[in-house]
Image 1 (tube, rainbow, N blue to C red):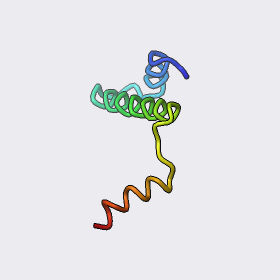
Image 2 (spheres, helix red, strand yellow):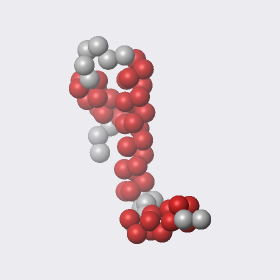
Image 3 (cartoon, rainbow, N blue to C red):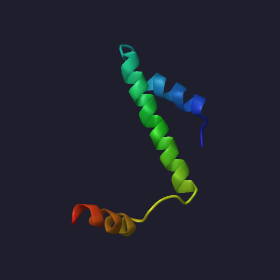
Image 4 (cartoon, rainbow, N blue to C red):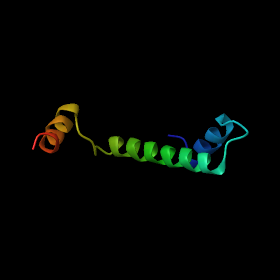
Amino acid sequence: MSSAVQDVKDLIDHLPDDTSIEDIQYHLYVLEKIRRGQADIRDGKHFSSEEARERLSKWLNP
């Protein structure tokens, strides 16, 4: 897994020169959510598709 600093550098390198600070903040937010999700998966903190369907069905079908 690459470091947070390297991920930010890669992100900045791929954004257009006219990107606003607000857009950069949004992309950093999304990047962090992805990194946390990857860490959760790596740590076994996730549900299978079937488990997710089962859990969501309780909310979607009252």
